[in-house]
Length: 394
Ligand code: S3P
Image (cartoon, rainbow, N blue to C red):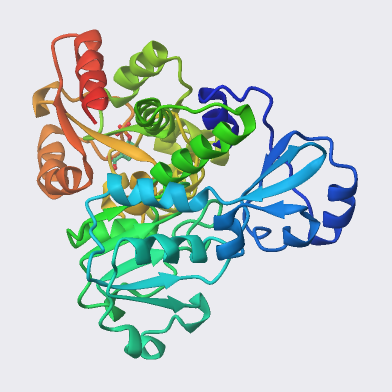
């Protein structure tokens, strides 16, 4: 997301480059850039190639921004600024708390520096190699957990860097990962109602401080807050859930059109993948095979950002779909009266009584997953407007 965020801040010519470690010397020899950001895993490895460091980069031994001035490459650290902004935006307070930082890579030292400035009681480091519940007994008294490791980051989302139950006294969780928007660790904290915050505010704030260095002018905090809100919305998928035949696809298409976003229907993707219609899949392969294909399709679609997705009504019957749908998703339960549900081409909607049973089994699950509930209105347009209103309130 960095090119998109930098564009918002006025840095227009910004692209992503991926290099191997043995390419670093050559990369710095022929350095045609005015400035770059450095990300995982090179924040420490770039130090020998720089002519000078700013005080925070020097103190933390970590560089995430390099600017060329008078032919010299100067290393900066804007992660510390980014983390402080994230902390301020979050509902987590670290004052006099026992904090554990997971990960010992480039971003852990700037984080420790800020926790120290914010008067944390104790700051401990945990390498994510020590991550069995038994290996963590000495960290049991942790009150604030900060993930500074890449575990749980796209494209390997769906895993946590530590077993959550090893920390019975948690009062706050911070994860510097911004993609997915809600990592597994954040979702585990949310499920337990522990105050938490993902890494998007930090990503935007470190980008703001970097953009100031690239462009040599200051950018207001108000602008940064606006951009954070824009990027949060741009990134979030709008996911429609609800009973079969409730109008998720028709409403979803209108919502996508109004926002100029791509639209996906998970059932259509399953049909493409298997090469059979939904009734044929149920008849020839059975529901279990259908659910497996549905999970695989959701895994792929929900790792994208900025899409509108209509799901099949039964996706909530598999718990493993919940973290997928939530990771980048704003989930809207489209609540349609039973008598208005379409039953065409829907193998499980055999009669109204079958629909009533499905509703009784699923209504609570839809509520559990949803961030909001939208009642189906008289027209598709009105319903789509309500979905958008809820999304804008988010
Ligand atoms: C199903 C709903 C259907 C489709 C399949 C199973 C369900 O999608 O995924 O027939 O279990 O409710 P719609 O919700 O779009 O009808």
